Amino acid sequence: MGIKVRIHYNRNEMKWTVKTYKGCPRYECVWVKNGWETEVKRESKSNPRGFVLTTDDNIVILTRTEAEKVKERAKGRLTYDKVNMCFNMQRGEELIFTKEGAFII
Image (cartoon, rainbow, N blue to C red):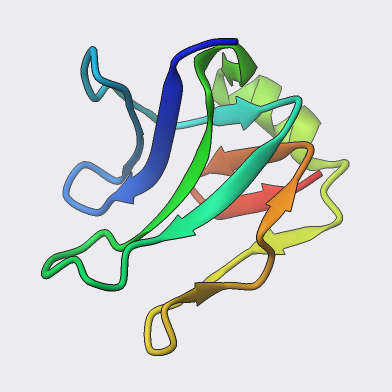
């Protein structure tokens, strides 16, 4: 079992933040394999309040070209409702993060 990872979008840099206790690197394209789930921190006073959780051994960093190939298999999007503070799906097996958003595979 790997290190717990939280993934969220960084609007300032327009990249995905992959946060662990070791640091917060940012990437344009991230592929989550072998399981993920969502978490919402309603009591948080600042954004982000919604995260995707997984472990670092489930993370694959992709180039834009590689990500486009994986995204072709997408079945839908993972979306976050800021008003109701909830995701449209709570867990799944594979997810890809690109500049266009998060896609369920």
